[in-house]
Figure 1 (tube, helix red, strand yellow):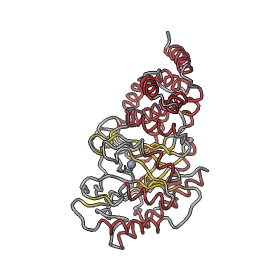
Figure 2 (spheres, protein in one colour; figure 1 turned 30 degrees about the vertical axis):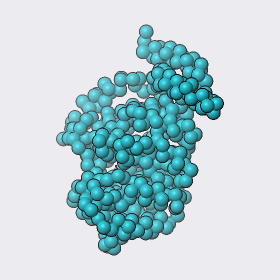
Figure 3 (cartoon, helix red, strand yellow; figure 1 turned 135 degrees about the vertical axis):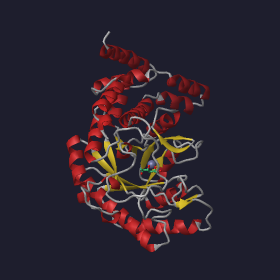
Figure 4 (cartoon, helix red, strand yellow; figure 1 turned 45 degrees about the horizontal axis):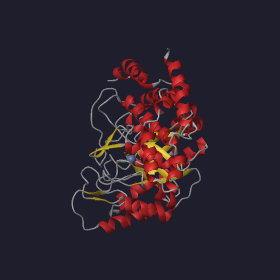
Length: 419
Ligand code: RNT
Ligand code: ZN
């Protein structure tokens, strides 16, 4: 039997199997089709960007590995993203960092960036049917140091405030241009390697800086703020901790970004969804995979990610959660890394959408806890993968492992030829 016939047949059988537990597969597929993932541009080039400044590394961001073929300029990164899009179903977004501006050969410092540096991105994205999201970049710069927005030194602080304000303006212009809000994420590495006696002071300064940055109200962009547990070389103290941003977000009604690599390893990020939804306007996700620490390994289909997706679906919150990816593995084929992570995230949401939740809730509401646990166990083995294959088939993209050869082909023809 031909592969497409096999997929079609398996889908039909699987669909019946799901109907028996009260799940409408077509409805799940329709919802999956609408889930757009904000693809992080920085996996393509190990978070390097296209500034012409003499950057100094550091600031808690570190891509490891030196697999050949990273994107060296805007054209290459766009080509890579275009290729990725042919290997995943659905319509997605592209998440840019401020350092990815189209600066040509000009030296544009971070406090000088303007919407015009992103015009070509906006045009290209429109052509490709992509919406853009944005990030300020406070790492990898001579003024990054250990403290940026929380720096007691007014000059340095003001530099970063100016940068971040400009990023919000750029996001506003992107949102206007694409007629859809641009989600702008703010993450800073600020912290201390060793013991500090000024925990309160730095956080007070950060709160003030944020208030200044957010003073201008915009209609076409949305702010989100991202916490972290710790950064490399800043292990003892993080100014922008989860408590800090959760408090700020709840008080000032800002979106809190949950990066799945930014918590204690045994902490459940999935469990945070329902609380955030009650006290903050929306949620932004950075789906990642921490190995022992915030290692930014490629997102895969694991319990952390499926639990997260299930919680979002159970809370009926797909329209309040922005799903972005955040990892940068420089040790394997970078394009393949994108495809694995995007597909894994979609699979997790598909599993969430295929959960027999009506029946599960009936059991729970009746106090039938054995039955609830039994069905949760059985649901793990329901043939979701047959539905997944069908999703790929319908989207006209490689089914199952077939994308491996497509990635290899692109490597052979394109990325392996990069110096
Ligand atoms: C860093 C944060 C942040 C970055 C990107 C590049 O720990 O996760 O989101 O990864 O902004
Ligand atoms: Zn992140």
